[in-house]
Length: 394
Ligand code: 13P
Image (cartoon, rainbow, N blue to C red; front, top):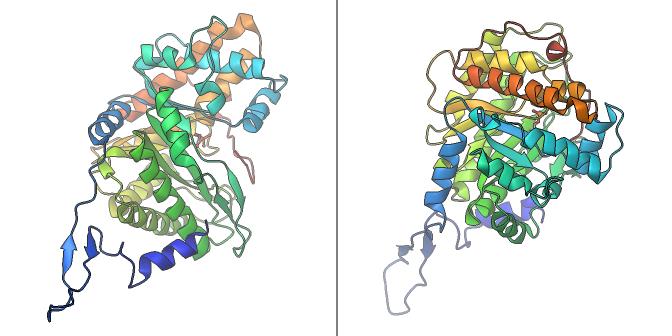
């Protein structure tokens, strides 16, 4: 449904939904008084306690999220980079390698899966979900249906997936998922237009409310793409605008802030900007944005890596944890946790153990960065390679 229609309803003076927790009572024919407003409580969420517990488990000290939720098409790109075909068997082998890594739960508190993996078993017949739960890793699920062009915008996109979402999220809960992810994007070189920002924020807020209603902690991810030659101040300005709208519409939708997690981009210069910024500068700008926009009730900020190299993403996270923050500041990386794993595995069964060790190296480095104790020593050249791809699609 077009969001503009929904906004019109929210703004209409006749709407029974105006005023967060009240409905206009009908004027009594006999009464000479102006119609009074009767406060009705918003229905208490069935799952509120569980949501708070799940969010706290994921945002636990020294741990973060492993994102393995690439759609089949995107997983195909990963496999193609090491010369493997995009078959269900190859996707299963790769996900099995990642999710059965011994000791992963020490550093990883949650794993975001694609639907195929949520319903998949290992080659030994064990559910992937059970492999995670055994290691005290919370299973999560990507629920958005991807990006399509946004008509009326400046070549921008919007994220699909709200239709039928409530029935999908309740099925995912039954299957063992306890948190969800919805990723939409905002492009700085394309504007961003007010329309694209509003649409992104509204979609995220509707998704978050629906997920909480089904017992899933929503990860709210408006990715501000790295594309562009703008400086860091411009990114800060756009990030503040985006997050102000996201927070506003989350509140409008009565989302429980204690039961969500945010997945922002770090505030960096555009990938094609003439100068790079140091981890300290990135941390300063990112924390400035968060302090100005994000309520301390939110338990966790789980950054995406967005095309940074593995080492850059870890150094920047570490810089943000040099002094206490009101939220758990951690990671939810896909590319910055998987790159050296893939390069080590190469699709060969005899490399599985070495590839799992490579995953543990990255997971441990980011765990230390979450605690502000990462030194950046002994990192491989591969881990320092940037992964930015212009116009990258997930
Ligand atoms: P990256 O860390 O590769 O940017 O992934 C972000 C993401 O949304 C995956 O869930």
